Length: 220
Image (cartoon, rainbow, N blue to C red; front, side):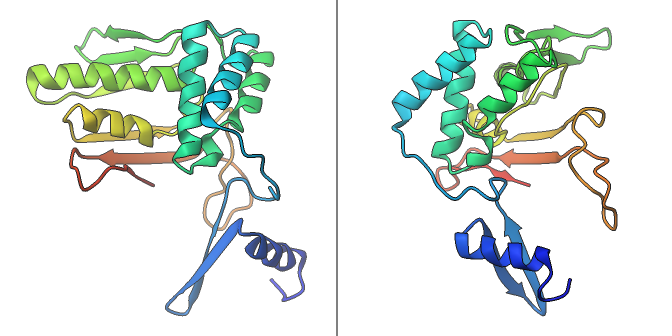
């Protein structure tokens, strides 16, 4: 873009605000933008009041108390892990999705074995956060029995910060890999290379192994 183009001017503003960082790799300038692009002010709230408020909001949109607490705690833990894009800002998204009937706030995951012997966690239209947690816990159980486990998760909403679940698996003593992707129909957020059309959903991969020197998961 030309030096004075609106895109370049906006990027310069974001660099000054800290929502975009940049560094040079060889002769190329690599820029990394926060998902909270444009946020200029923050309110500091203790994590315990924030957990209570999140659970209350989730209860108001129809979540049973255990689900409201589980999802609310996950969002606050994401904030504490400095992944604000997957923190309490998602409460607005979840409320909108419930109002649109895109998901069922009371949906609870069930663990099933299909006719071919594969383990599947059915989110039953509920939160992906609950479904992925159920899958990791079941996977840890199967891993202790047979040494390894593979499970699929389906029919659920947003899965939150998947790094938390890789860390959960690692605490169970398992090398944990989570590969996930959303619905092309509902979440057209990503434009492929040389395209301006948002025709794909995001894809995330996260791995974690149990080791004292590696307390955090590695995501991409």
